[in-house]
Amino acid sequence: MVEDGTSLLGAALDRARRVRDAVEKLDGIDVMGREIVDQGLAFDLDPLALTFDVSGLGITGYTATEHARSAHRVNLGASDTVRISARLTHADTDERVDRLIEVVTAPVADAPSLDPAPEVDFPSAHGLELETVMLPREAFFAEIETVPVAEAVGRIAAELVSPYPPGVPVLAPGERITREALDYLRSARAAGVLLPDPADKSLATLRVVA
Image 1 (cartoon, helix red, strand yellow):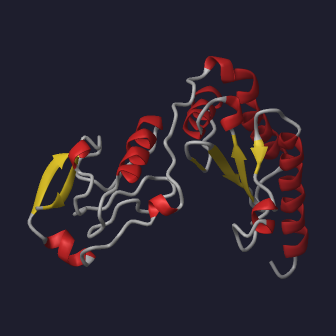
Image 2 (tube, rainbow, N blue to C red; image 1 turned 135 degrees about the horizontal axis):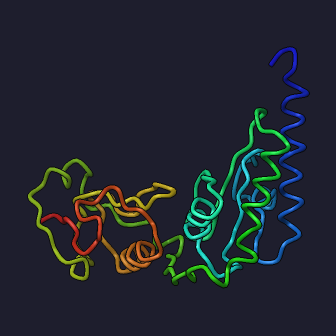
């Protein structure tokens, strides 16, 4: 890094710009850029971390990632209901960047044959700020019962529910469960979100304080 860091990272930054420039020209895919910093939504942007919004193609990021894997044998870094991401390093070559551009842009032509995106009932920002009515430890170790998810509204959560990605909890022990949070979790799961935390991965039931 002392001897060649400037040239190595400079070349990586140039390649990242080439990917951004190639994808930004396409209809249906938006490239996350410094607008998130300008809007105060982030402190800064890692130029080597590339994030693409594919919702304009009518598909989910999960579908785009699976298509990249099955049709092109390329694993992308991460995905969610609307985005896919990839990360470049100084070790990537021009050939790898060409391959990345090919894979990221492929859904533009292939989208009509891919599974359409199911609707996700995204909550408001306030809808994710649940009321904590018990200490997390007390709720976690309390006497619990398992109830159908439709009957969990208003009850106190006794387990963690963190959709992945990003892996940030929507429900935590001790919080009062709301309809808005449950609608988001159920619709997100139907869209392909992973729920690694709850005892019932299908989210048909939830563990709540008795």
